Length: 518
Image 1: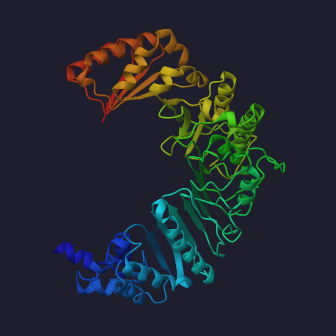
Image 2 (image 1 turned 90 degrees about the horizontal axis):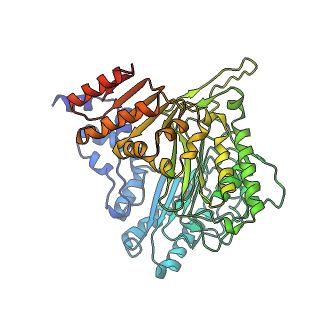
Image 3 (image 1 turned 45 degrees about the vertical axis):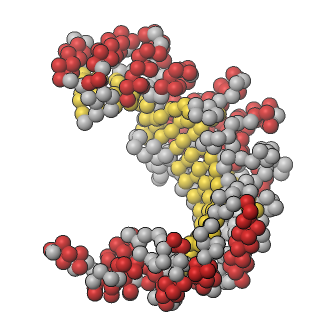
């Protein structure tokens, strides 16, 4: 009972935030909002809930027209958040369709508009008409408060081309699953200067780099940009600029996070022509289901793109390179599930080392992003493959790395990749298969050649208690392969006590430190 009294004693402003935080999305599959339950707990909660207009203005409409009307009556002047769903259930639900019409009559005060469209081919034209009705209603409204719009389709061939409404204060646009095949670019009515977030997934808007640059030039305040998609079979992205745009021609000085996960050629062509702050989170990946398709481009086009990509990254990280900054720890991984790719990545849990140069000064020490991920595709041509690896294996911010997270696939198929990082002093191995792969993969000389400066090994979550013979074999292998070894760490590893004592004694003969931690 005392706990109830403590909660009941909270100020209304805090209860408001708790109610909003715990609000469950209901939408077309529920008759009433979850906030209705909050208003029936006790008299005080009812008073607070009824006074919190935002509780009733979120995730409209609901399946019940009466409840939708009641929600609107409890927030008569507040900005609304609409979440409209078109699917097999809602399409022929008269109550929900009436509720949709009701909230569309309030578009002048809508702050957030989300539409989720799920349909089969036979309903495509019917759903398109419904979506266009919403866009027309939006075009006829003032849109003075609309800042966030998201439209998601389960069919990527759904044509979104239409007379888009003017949304003067739009800050966030998310489009997924449709295509703007009849448009050459996002219309200026959407690409406003105050746009902060742009997310395009399987939209297939840009056919060439000129269009991409023109769109991005129209949104100089952009802070978050995400591009992804599996690609359309008949579409080839033209990476050559007919207008001769120079590298880094689009300054996006407010960018905080950019994620490019389209085709590799499209990713790099776009990145080559934008300029973002060095502290911005950077992720240039590859769509898992899409291979590089080099045959679609001329050999010289690919070569030029790789050269420009390396130069752009060097310019992007120029401040860090000038100060001798580098990532102390990295992950270099190989993915063989689908098209083979290689990724170098740093995350916020990794340290950045700054070697101060007295000739260089800056007011901003954040010259490297806390999160970075750069991926390249595997190609059969040896020269092209090496040029791709050189994009990041020639940057000191990566090659001076001291701690590497071991990747078994990379070790088995391309151990030569590791040789670009001669400063590695510590290697982390996770799980038993990593350990077995590392020990059994190559000769002792190979280990010493690949990691000449290695003086520490860290085993993480390896269950040696099931195979203590593996542990003994690993220790003997490490002693033979790495004469400079100074410390072995077991972090979260299981082993029987007598084996741990035996290992400690064996390593003690070489004055090698051993630590155990949970």
